[in-house]
Length: 326
Ligand code: SF4
Ligand code: SF4
Image (cartoon, rainbow, N blue to C red; front, side):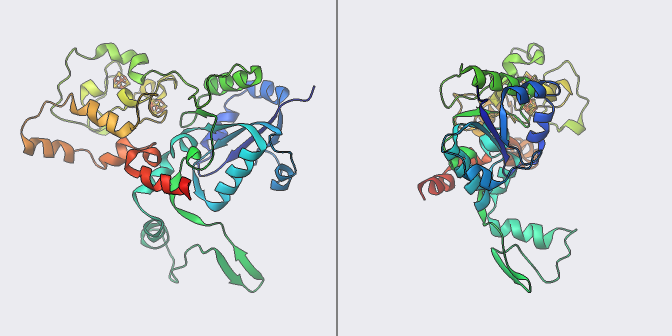
């Protein structure tokens, strides 16, 4: 019997999701035995024309990591959507826009200005920026269009399932692969991780006092972090109350607070707003001046609470809706 065809592709991402596949260690041999990999640019030499030549729906499942920032990435996402029965948004950037989505606080012009002109390490006396088309003695060079913002995958194509995490952990990847191979899949649109908050599964939760009342916030380097105690109870911002569990508390076990890479649980529409409301409920300050001082003690608060989810947040939803409508 023919093995199911599987494609893996990367868009706007750092490559960590590709590493996560390698982190399957010996389990990767089971995957390779069970499926026929037809696309995996980081590891194997397949070409776009190989995919274009396939029948629509011929690929059983495409795992796409990374957000969509360029016209080339959008073309690939649409091509793989057409050729695949299932599309899985793999990792935080495909799921929510991820860290590259933080650029959505700015437009393309501002990003170019910083990257190609203003940074201390930039040497660019002619002020060259990426252009769609550049005439060279050898001919005309073409580059994909860089969009004004980063899109999560489901803002560009229909997505069947989401594998969360920066990067998704090996046990969740294997569970997803096994579920797909056995056909025992949850309802379409599901996030393939428990629908509980990280605090619900975190061992430190029990160390929280019954009533939390914070009067100051500290950054990790400004305090001793007791490896037994809840970060929030110690005044260190931890996104656990607004984050889906399933990562195995990776950061917490390394004595670092959660930054929210698994995204929110199903009931939460906006992760940053959910966390801010949880935080506001435990702040015990009445004086407006003291409150201002507390707010100032968090550098880049929006970047902190939307570190992985800005592209899908209510803050930038309108831009994304315009894209879907276009
Ligand atoms: S806030 Fe962070 S440290 Fe505290 S219980 Fe939740 S996940 Fe654990
Ligand atoms: S603790 Fe938070 S940031 Fe760290 S891996 Fe888990 S969900 Fe991601």
